Length: 215
Image (cartoon, rainbow, N blue to C red):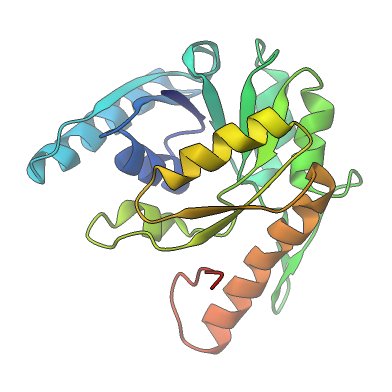
């Protein structure tokens, strides 16, 4: 499967590329093509060091959208609108949002847009796309650490049953991740709000890169 990662040179994007490249064709997208190419080369070199082959190329964000079957928005919440306004071609594409709107004062807190969640904002900006919430509660460092098997639960929300099922299968193909149907896109706010909770738990209890697992 071809996975286009918009904003693929950030921590989460690079980590996802490392995990996905051995079994999927990954397109790392960026506003800076040279940076995307460098990230792609680093991804393949890191895999080669472990004796693993992979498929990964670095292109611009628009090419990642055009070529990807599933598009992952690995971008900070504050850049969602400005990034998507520059891009086209999302019609009938599955667009995965792992985006979490988070504010910070003394503690981290959930700071959603007027739409109710980041995923619902994406759906408004991309009305012809099939938006799916997934991967919101996995830290970037966990994606990058290939020595550590991913054993987390991933809540998946979507208003499109087919797109949701496809993303759940995609989730289940990665390490030991397990996908759970979390309902329609309106439930995304609950999923996204778990991340600031995890950040506060980690800070207050001297933990690192806390995730969730349903048992």
